[in-house]
Image (cartoon, rainbow, N blue to C red; front, side, top):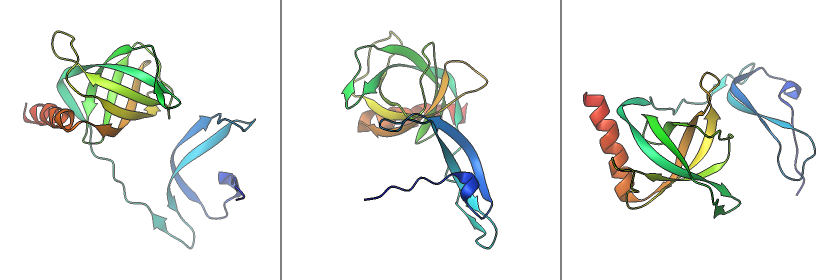
Length: 161
């Protein structure tokens, strides 16, 4: 199978691009730019529907502990952070540790005493904040049902307050 790499500037019709991300994938010697294309203009006039849901500011940040997955295994280091903004499928996390976009994470929600709640969450870092160091957005990729319910409760409590 032949892989075609196209550059955004090679596309004939104007593109609507929300953001671009520089990556250095394995097996390729050059840095690549991934573009989040949201529309193709010109004769196509094609616009992808926006599926982003609004992030709710949590009344009280939710403490988490996370580990960066290395290949398919959980890394040995664990880091503390706080979920400050939350939507059904996404969250914003503040932490002292920098996380690069596209890395996979395993997270544990913590109770008020810093103990892990039963179960775990999996997520992919999708964006880092340019405004705040150590602040990054994640998209949930898997969760235990009890933790999904806990996240819904946190969101609902913050919307009501």
